[in-house]
Length: 347
Image (tube, rainbow, N blue to C red; front, top):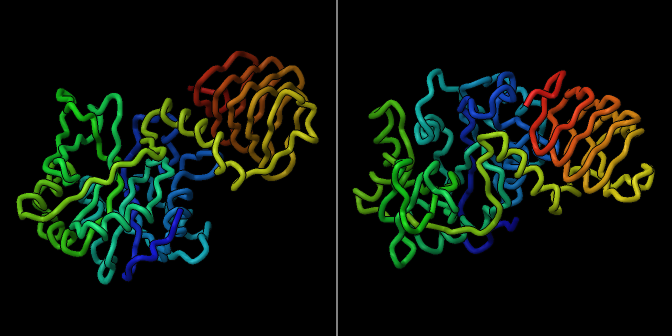
């Protein structure tokens, strides 16, 4: 990602990380969604490092569900040059309400980059800030065209790239099929409007409240359409596909090293993390093995697959195009195109 160089002004980051992540089922029973691993690194770590790459020196989290787990992560996983601040909400107040909850930490910032804590993306945040600055917008929404926009906030855009409305209604499909990715750049002028809205509704939303109020006041809201990778990892299938996508990008080399030279797997491209794993079974395709993985004799892995730290495959276990969470223990059986976790690979 590129650091903005065409303008002055401090950039701060906000990660909205308060939600429960219930659609991920048992995966988030004890693990908040922002800490769910992608390539065996917490999703939020990727976001923070991408913000750091554009010159952000402070990132503020809004928290609620399993807040202590994320607070522990902010204290124990330093990111060079970035101060991590956590604000815990006693009650959920909606996505825009989460941004409103951290307003006191945003005074003096010229640009605030807001990212949903469940966003797995390679969007260049620096390029978005540059576009926001160039267009002199009060707020910029990163948008993307998708096949089925109904689960997301849909965006109405005029011929000049300005947002003229947003729709969040699963019964409607706009012809453009353009959605909000939950990534925003917000100016101080827009933050003042958000301050005015704070507490007016119980579930303060970007699509239904914040953006419409900006438009009602005559402020400019820009659309910044991206073709970069973006996924809301709200369901296991999305988590699987996001992990497999990044497994095929240069991000893999940031967190792992090739190790097929010491594994008898001529038809495989094996990457490892931490101590060299114990591999006695068979591997084909591109596979990432987390720290202290054990692949027993008589087991088989077919890529693209990611095995989380301390995953164990018993004899007779076959894992095809899947991912495992840390500490997964797989018995004999076939596990295909799924997300696995726990003692018996529940999915």
